[in-house]
Length: 244
Length: 260
Image 1 (cartoon, one colour):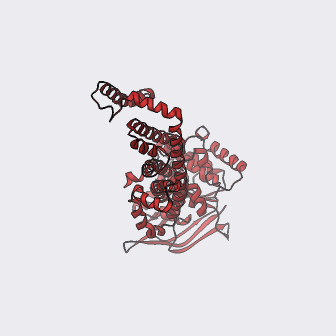
Image 2 (cartoon, rainbow over the protein chains, first blue to last red):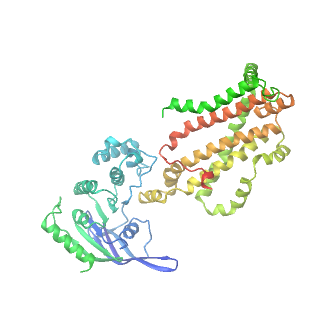
Image 3 (cartoon, rainbow over the protein chains, first blue to last red):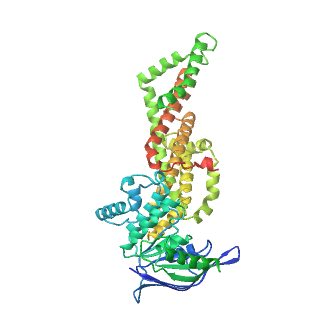
């Protein structure tokens, strides 16, 4: 388990000599074993933040520390679930789940893969290829693949963004269940305010590349969007994003 | 449509051609010296098969194709992978590749005979020239068109460069590689017959050439039919052997001809 402390993080890049600021002056604390959701309009820098955290992009400025309690530790195992499932089309569901375990002993690998097939309800589809399963099922496989890798920090970039409302609801519920009993730190990016409140212990609102507000969500899981307090959180977040 | 129906439909036109050929040549409309009637072709084929002549020529042609094709693959595949991974190499090679690619292998035969003689090596060199480019270009295409999003998956799982190559780049290039091999096999078959027509002492091309000297159009036609049928059978065999490897790729990798 590990947390993240981000200090003065900035990211700029150039498109045809025009300087674009994707992130500026990000200061953020993510406790170990916490579930943090990040919301914001498109272009607010959510994806860039995740891509920097998992090393797919370089930061321009600032520091990222990994923490355990009060101590600073070396970089832990971090992985990411993308918006699209990004499964290997030539591998079956089962092989995709175990994709990250390349140097693992075959017996251990089999056990881990079986466990995650079971956990995500994919047993019946284990021999199917990605083009034979639905989008929701594919995203489930992608989630299983990342869990099987067993990182200490999981970054999720709108993993449910492309799914229909029903599949989405089911998977939201499953994600809550999956992480309730696990020692994992999760940063979950979404543009859906309800999803952010449903899942996060803390909602971070990003705007134009900066943290606009951080709102701790003090609601027990599983949360219901119909409750009054949920409604109040939603109002608060929407007001912050809309700017009034 | 059922498979049997499909086969029947595909047989319709060849059967019609045979029927017309049979009727016109037996009715004395066609000059049987220029186009012998079908029954004579069958008789000649039967004799050639019985004497073992056909088998001997087919065997030596097939041996050349497979040996040459294998060498072409051994040369083309690693080169393409290397250039696909180390892109700057392409800048150095582009002119030579484009130049050689547009020279038909048959045009090189006189030089190859001069250098290598009329034995096996010149035929194999022709096949290498013919099969190299389809394998090379399609493999290259497969390697450089690897989806960067899949490579990022490798990155987030901490894959090394070697892991990414063997687990992501190579498998995703397989459909392209097999398309290239299939094209290369067809090309090498055609180029070989050309080479055998010019200088050889065995092979189907030689059999045809020899028949011309002896004024035996029936043997020539048997040779042509053998070439066509064998080419088709080789392609079918290769396809059925490799279809499983690229079955995940529904759209199918585009051949370099389609991409051009």
